[in-house]
Structures are given as structure tokens and as C-alpha cells.
Image (cartoon, rainbow, N blue to C red; front, side, top):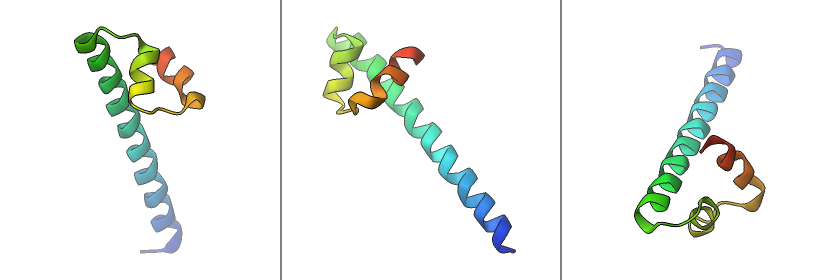
Length: 61
């Protein structure tokens, strides 16, 4: 397999992994909000989501 194809496959894999992580965190935020009756902000603090990323998740809720 050529190096360019390997690089492309690796980039695609990393992107897919990041999307999966984001989806998992969104689900965790929603679950905490529902079961613990907390706000989105409280759920993100509990999950230790960096402040810089919280707005991105808030927009998707």
C-alpha cells in the first residue's frame, strides 16, 4: 500500500474516532441531565469536558 493511501486511511480513522468520542460525550451529557436532573453545564463539569469545548456540545444538545 502506498504511503499516501496509508496517510489518508489514518486521517479518516482519526476523524471517525473523534466523531465517535463526541457522540459518546453528548450521550453521557444527556444521560446525566436526565438521571441526575442537572444542567448541561453541570453535566459537562462532572464529565471534565474542557471549558473551551463546552459551547460546541451545548449547541448540539
